[in-house]
Image (cartoon, rainbow, N blue to C red):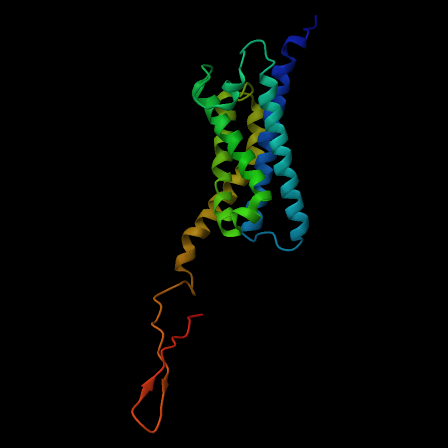
Length: 212
């Protein structure tokens, strides 16, 4: 006896897209951290292209994951339920974590194409929040995911999430040690005012050289 999957098609689609989004996001985060920690050197263009492809694929998977829920006949999500956190009555906390993660990953991923207007330095600081959005997505999947208790699901998530978490810890550790490394900025000496000697009294110029 077979079960007609038609009534569950939207739910199955959402589950598959959500799982794909988490895997793709984990790979994108891992690759980004590998580049930022300089653990992967060379082939910068290829690595950047792969990272961008994974990020865009994650966004597509997130959109499919959320949009498919609108057609589900069991939960009856509205557009507001899938777009605004803490509004849905179905597993409110876990659902909200997913919404925050989805918006965070999409906006931060697309911000790459606006970095010319945002500014490179400001964009790099903003892009660091991608890791937080990814962690929120991981929490959402483990807390609300239909397959969260399945061994295969946990094994697949561990396969992509543990390396990303390890790289994130490495990146944070390096950032914490950065101020104590040789060459770090220390007290800046006051610039000396050059003197011009003449046959008369010593004179000074009013020009102060700019520090390097």
